[in-house]
Image 1: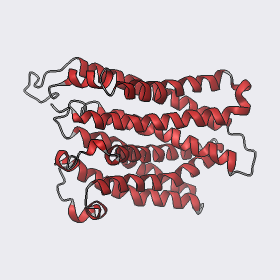
Image 2 (image 1 turned 180 degrees about the vertical axis):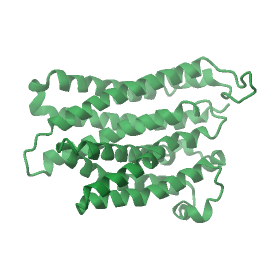
Image 3 (image 1 turned 180 degrees about the horizontal axis):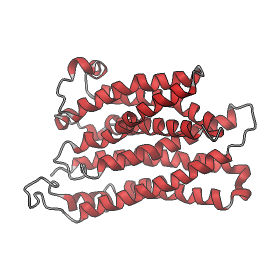
Image 4 (image 1 turned 90 degrees about the vertical axis):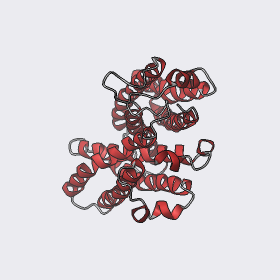
Amino acid sequence: MESIILMNSKWGNDIFVPMYLFFGGLSGGLFVIAVAADLLGIKFKQFEKFSRLTSYLVLPVLALAGAFIAFHLGKPERGILFPLYFKNFDSWLVIGGWSVGLAVPLVAAYAALWYYKIDATIRRVLGVIAFPILGFVSFYTGLLLSGAKFVPLWSQEYLPYLFLNSGVLTGLAGSGLMYVLYQNYVSSKSEESSGVLRIIGYAIIFFVLVELFELQRFMHHLASNPVKIDNSGLFVAPNGSIMAYEYVTQGVLAPWFWWGIIIFGLTIPLILTFIEMIFDKIIRPYVNWVAGVKFALILAGGIILRFVIVWGGDLKA
């Protein structure tokens, strides 16, 4: 049972589970962005370098996710050799382990195809095949927590979609930050990066607004205190939803939620994106710096989101 495995220690007081959720979601988001940019590169060649750099980033991020959850389990060899130990295929921990295990060779092969410049059609076909698998890796990080059932803040209705959107958003930020750093410090060519950054900006506006909408619906769901059983007799939500809502928005987690996630992780990056677009000519000499700050804030907000959700698990039904 995930609840027992995850709670074999006071896991809310360490970094292992939140960072696993973050890096797992980030790896899925990075791959989704790499493949989308690769397909855009068919028509817009400036996205080819962006896709290639992003593809190189996915595997080490996925390895970090695996390392965090393996060492959290207490016996890392059981996590590393999960096919030999994890046999309960009804468990989201096992399903997630297999999805991550399947993702690793696909991610490695995709990056290798980019590195060795092998046929672009083969690479893109592989990317499209692996696209839903890596998307599921981001989605599954929400299912892993919500499978516990008895924690009000771990909603199976809202958490997987929130983590999926956050995975794509942080993937945009991670790939954008790497691209900016590469253009500033590594690339010997004075390439024009504003076109790529502008498209990333449009995507960030969309996913930030989606995440704000999802958080609003999630908090409204908790505040409405849904009953435990609906008319059909099906389980809807654990008791204590209002307490969870107050715990996150008004209690000890409120500064992290409002300042860490809403303000610094979402609102300021949204404002900076609009500034980039409206005052494009004025800030052009500093556009990479502005974009870098924006990307870093989104990544920090994604980490804080996972910590808030995990810390909120201390409030049981």
